[in-house]
Amino acid sequence: MRIKVSVVLLLIVINTFFYISCPTLRAATADKLYTVAMITWRGDTPAERGFLDGLQHFGYDIHCIKYPVNQKIKQLDTAITTLKKDKVDLIYVFGTTATKHVLREITDTPVVFNIVTRPVESEIIANWESSGNNATGVSSMVPIIHQLETLKKIISFSTLGIIYNPLEQNSLIQRNITKGLEAQLHFKLFEFNITKDSSVPKILEGIHTIVDAVYLPSDSMVKIRGKDIMSEVNEQKIPSLSAMEDVVVKDAGLIGLVPDYYLLGRLASEKAHHIFLGKKPSLVPTSTLDHFNITVNMNTAQKVGINIPTSILVMADTIVRQ
Image (cartoon, rainbow, N blue to C red; front, side, top):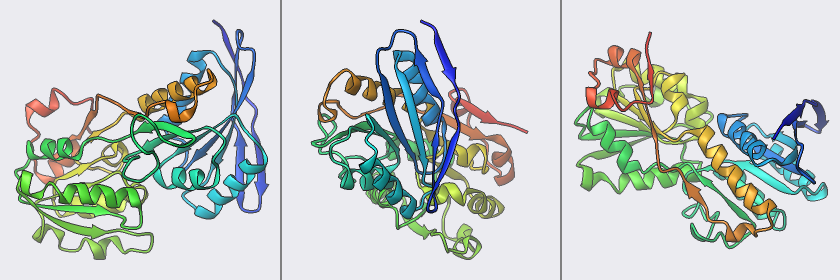
């Protein structure tokens, strides 16, 4: 099968909101052009590339319109208002916050969500087998107990700090799960709350006198302020574990046990495929990956004085070196 890709770029200003017509995917054997709206909460990620590549693989003619809402609820609401008027065949949406907003307002158009850590606990779906609504999707969940057990192989911590935004429901869920592991993994949890207006140096001042290590869950605010956070953490020589790969690769976190965003996108495209074949979203089970990547930053290991065990390095998918 031969696929031709034509690139059309359209930028329209609607109040303070932008939408972008992204590449139209043409397949020689397809008999219908599907229009897909893509709501991206924090810009393009490998998850969106995986989703579009997956749709190409299935041979669909796809015209996609991207709505980059930049983590702003006002822009998200504008996108939703637009989509209520301009019907599309399917809505792809990134993240817990955006997905919950979309599903509150749009109940007829099929929705495929991606990078939602805890879809049941956040009440996006009724259960993993059936959403009970017009959605299905992919969870980026990595069991927190597996992440912390990985960190235990590096440092035997008895006190753990969690750095997160308490205003994000997904982050609160992860905090509660981590808190629930205190007795099983023998540590005491300390919380450090980071919001948009927080002074990172002030919040993390003297954190090395309180905790042996820190955990950074999948959190949009932590992602945005990753460099500031890790600068403080590394300066105080505290080992860190991240649930987000970019925090390790780009912001100098020590180690991460993370999902592969590209593969999550490919898995999300399978959900869209079932919908385009005529299946109701509520009858398409929500899924997660069964393999997670280990990412290690050796520069950070040297800076904070940690020796990464060989057993971790031989399993690592990504190793950041000088």
